[in-house]
Image 1: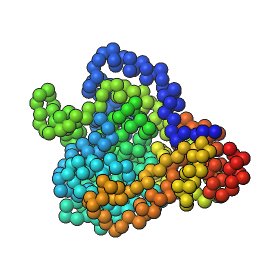
Image 2 (image 1 turned 90 degrees about the horizontal axis):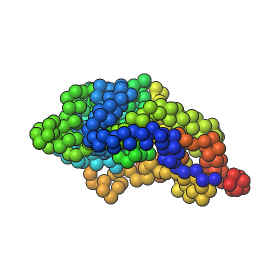
Image 3 (image 1 turned 60 degrees about the horizontal axis):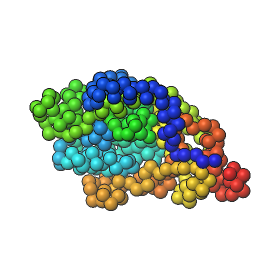
Image 4 (image 1 turned 45 degrees about the horizontal axis):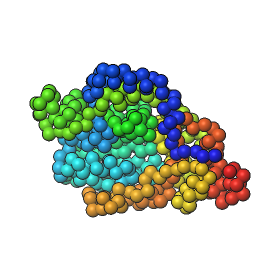
Length: 376
């Protein structure tokens, strides 16, 4: 059996007809930039996230960059974040001219450890950028408490957390602003690139609207130096169709996670830990194993595709060396980078596939090659 890490064709099959219709309708009008689908999707996504505003942009990276700019982060400011994330998190900080300050992550959830924040705050600290990783939100209650005590802005990196909650509040609704990615493999994915900034601040929303469109509120009148990062009508039309399915797809992911947990009970594999008060939407199902690389190779040999998110922490990347500063060491970050393994996870997985993945992993971890042969 072959089990892909993700199967975008399976999801497209479920929405093929309505997607084809909205694309055809949009092309018939040829109103392709900042038109009715973008406006409608912004309103629908704001409602979904329980925020006052949502502003469509070109990508999740742009959403992070524009959120930081709109929240008043300037060159020389410091932004506290983590090194266990995709590189775009740091790119956004650097693109606004700010300085990343790295703190370690919680050993259970792999998200920013709030207890590490206050020692990292200095005279130039202006913001905290927590990453909601793998589909689980960082501990926003504790993070916001620190931010409020020190007058700091909080921008949520919610690019992997569409629909996740923390104590009943949606990702993207708690900080001063948040960034979402609709990259095609995300829980809510476009057919290409797209992103969104959410916020409850009218001033922040209006600034993002200007910045995404060359700083222009009306044609040829530019109030700010912005960029070209407009969510296009074709992507917005697709995302409107798919948003209606997001909760069902997230429930399927949660069901798959429970099944993995049952099947891996008693195996020397550390399964995902969900923080009390959080709802995990499992963009990724990430386990920790010893001898990770050999196990991954063995799984690949029997048709199970896996991923590593992320194998090289930001501060150890060639492009990340020497940038910013590290406070308190990153022992947890560096340790988990050697042991984390992402198993196949997408809504359309079936029980036979999940049982096969779990059986193959169990056999390799237990070094029971005879059992592995039987599974194959």
